[in-house]
Amino acid sequence: MTATTTAIDAVAALAELAPIGADGTRGGWSRHLLDEADRDMRAWFERTASSLGLAVETDANANQWATWAPDGATGPAVATGSHLDSVPGGGPLDGPLGVVSAFAAVARLQADGHAPARPIRVANFAEEEGARFGVPCLGSQLLAGELGSDRVRALTDATGVTCAAVLEAGGIDPAGIGRDAARLADMALYLELHVEQGRQLAPLDAPVGIATSILAHGRWRVTVTGRGDHAGATELASRHDPMMVAAATVRAARGRALAAAPPTRSRATVGKLQVIPGGSNAIASEVRLWIDARAEHDADVRDLVARIVADAEAAARAEGCSVTVAEESFSARVEFDPALADRVGDALAPGFGAVPRIPTGAGHDAGVLAAHLPTAMLFVRNPDGVSHSPHEGASEADIRAGVDALTAALRALTSGDAR
Ligand code: HGY
Ligand code: MN
Ligand code: MN
Image 1: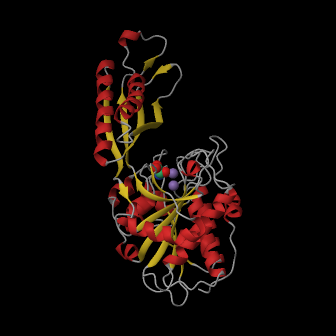
Image 2: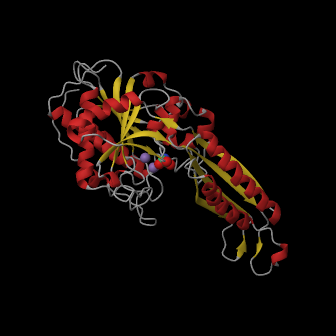
Image 3: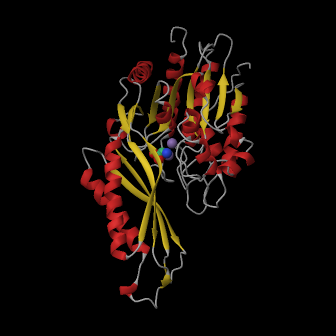
């Protein structure tokens, strides 16, 4: 497809996306796999890619791809991009900043008359947050062959709709999900730009950073079963209240993480909790809660969760309740490719000087791909570090600096002598 010279301003593009999935109840944005907001984001992806003359496709795992392959661009692509879905009530940049910046960088390279030696491919990975079906990086994990297809097809959302049904309704054949070896092989490397999550760049007075590692992390669903009863008529001594066990579990998550930190950089969170039946004048019969646990190494996470679960089981015994725990996802610690990080750092040096190398506690599709191909991440400074919240932000100057950095990196990574 012929190159065009459509300029894309990342700040303006983010403003164009702002109305999509704006959550009037929670604040922030809620965009989840193939729901109405996600479909609108995907339509924007297609429009923007087409405006740049990129070839657009959706793969068997619901990931979107837009490829710039002018004459002379041969071999596996240099891939970039991120995700367009969000956590419930999330911020405006987590995901979209990477996709918007990728399109802006391609537009800049086209306008500069850059002749890439490799195709440049922009990705929108499906369901990175796992907010609809509970498994993070769903699209990239499927692509990489890291999830069982039958399990994924059977995943259900909060309304009980299966992932298979949602994919089918979105035009994706659920029978076709799974490892896509050809598409993996058609990527020489992957470079993801993302808003910083946590506050490391501001103290360093740096607008951008390069990732070194991702904490190991996982999600566990805890189901506590007790005996539903009347809040007023039931004596305290005869209660079997699952909420008491849930409360003990929430406190154990913080307590055990504090006891393990700081050498393990452990952290555990319960951010999602469901009470059944949920009446204000009824003792619950069941409480479901989800533990998000993270730490420096895989074994640290598993040790942390084992301790929290032991506390939950002790609390259940004391309250005459039962508890079951199911692991919903586990992502091993990621070490990004040092050589690629150095190539990115070298490309940024003229414009940014020495770019800080920083670890992250947040998972990313880049973390999934890192086990399969050279992968790196660029972070854009987040002044107060807040993310997974409507208060997530970055300055316009830093958003534009991120595009400058990604443009410089993609130019270097697709120059004639870079293979
Ligand atoms: O949960 C995470 O770390 C990522 O935002 N999915
Ligand atoms: Mn996120
Ligand atoms: Mn993200």
